[in-house]
Image 1 (cartoon, one colour):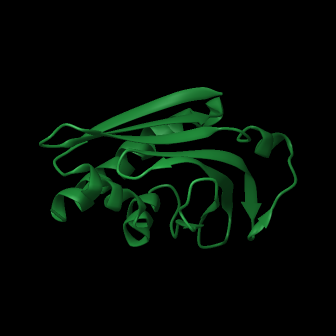
Image 2 (cartoon, rainbow, N blue to C red; image 1 turned 135 degrees about the vertical axis):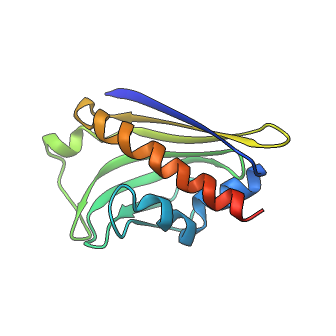
Length: 147
């Protein structure tokens, strides 16, 4: 596994950036960069399960490993979903099992620095290096337009 890191400065409060990330209609806007129709299904509580799915019910099932509102959201990926069903662990899904995805918000007083780190299988490096900056630009636009 490889760790990728991304940072973006957003001229908005941490609470506004948090909302841009995790309010479901906002999440759906920036997550569609990865797959059209992407959404998340969860009660958004620490320790709860979360499904990251596309409009075909394919994606990942994970847990919210740690959550500190307006500061930190951490996911631990468990496995792969196909047609809304958890797939048995195979070589492909084992690549993702235990992978962490972390969102840290740092209050800069007049802005917020959003830092994302994620564990990924190396064969996904080019994909996420292309897509994640695009997604973060959408988060920035959502947050800065909702001040």
